Structures are given as C-alpha cells and as structure tokens.
Length: 169
Image (cartoon, rainbow, N blue to C red; front, side):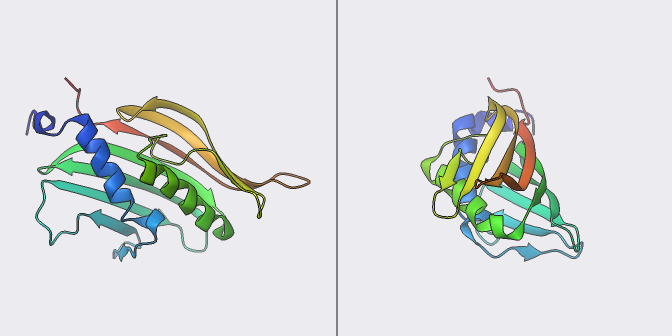
C-alpha cells in the first residue's frame, strides 16, 4: 500500500521499536522456535489485533556461537523499517549484552538499535558500540564486548545495519 507511512510517522515507528524490544530477547522473553531452527519474537502477540507487527527473528548455527537475524516492523501489513545483524558472542557475555541493550531501550535512545557504551566494573566487562553512523531512518555500525583486564579479551562482536523502507515526507 503506497503511502502507508503517512499514518505512521517515523517517531511512531521508532516508539514501536522500543516497545517491542522491551518485550523481546533482551528482556528475557521466551522465543517461538520455528521448524527451520530459527527463533523469533513477535510483538504485539498475533492474538492481539494491531496495525503494527514487529518481528525479531534470528538463527544460531548448531554447535557454533555465530548468529544472524533481522528485525522487521510492519504497519497495516506493509514493511516500514528493518534492521539486520550478524556476528558472535561467547555465552558468558550474553547477560551483559542484554543489560546494555535494555538500558537504551528503556531510555528510548537509538544507537543503531543497539546499546550505548557501558561497563560492568565488578566483572571487568565493557560493551562498545562503535562505528555507529546515521539515525533511525538509515544506520550501520558494530558492537563488541570485551573483558578489560591485564590483557583485553574480546568476547564477541556484531555488525548491524538498517533503516526506513520508504522515503519520509
């Protein structure tokens, strides 16, 4: 449907992104496991009638720590925004990653759909969102978690990119 974004301003799409992320992976929600081995979160749940749907779906290769996925926001059935991400994380870095992402989602701050730089002093973990360019309408960047001690040990990294799927007015 041409012009579907006319009734869904960019600010409203961004608000829906944050709302969905607060009900998804970073918040510890349980995913739906699909037959192809992927996992996904859909918000609002399909049984709720809504003009919006946010799908966050990802794959992790069996026996690996590598993953890739995407987030797609639709308004009245039309795709209006997307993000793709790929990379790897050690299992022990995942709770810290979720914490850093949630901090941004709760604050409604957009840094490429990921977190802002943060540290966990007692564990020595540090999250960096670097090379982040653009805004909600078009963006790309990289993030990583490292153990800051006598020597820096990388515990994972992801690249990401995305943006609007229409030209805003």
